[in-house]
Amino acid sequence: MKVHVNLFNSETNDLAIVIDLLRASTTITMALNTFNKVIPTNSIEKALELKEHEGAVLAGEIKRLKIEGFDLSNSPKEIQEFSGETLVLKTTNGTKVLENIKNRNEDVKILVGTAINARAVAKKALELANNDIELVMAGRREKFTIEDMVGAGLIINELKNIADSENITLDLSELAQVSYLISKDINQAGQLIESSHSADKLRALGCSEDIKFCKLLNYSDIVPVYTDKHIIKLE
Image (cartoon, rainbow, N blue to C red; front, top):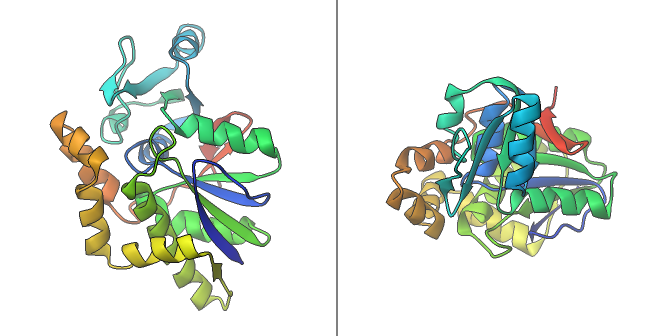
């Protein structure tokens, strides 16, 4: 099984795991505890329209601040106080990554992964992939962020653990090897998340609890899957 890592743009025709550790992937995973589906969008106007016509809960941020007229920011801690049929999530990069993959190849299977569901998403990826697992770092404005590489590495660590126990051979690309090595030490992985530029910005806005939550490893068994322009829990 080939395992490789890319930034923003996807190349696989098999299975992709999209990672936006601080905070969209974590918020999506937690939201599926209390919502039936998550609709990701880049459009504030579309989000407000869905709220008006479907009664959806709106989550999202611009420059990490809650958008006027929305119910909450892109916060995995806050989302636990909400429930309903549909959560609409306004993201900076995540929606673009998801849409770009499907626009290139509708048949690609897309999971959403992060630290809190690393083991669960790794297990499901090995079950669903034919021969290629790609970890796609969302980054920020299409630029590299260290926390997403750490997230990729945490998932690769779980892939390796499962593969070793099931006699599956993994072929890691060079970038996948780097991601794995920087995340193999869990304490170091947490420190890299804490010291990231994104974490600094969140702390300045009083979101330290979100950072702590996004660092939790294997907190959830939920595996989100993107299909038909929305995200649901994979059973």
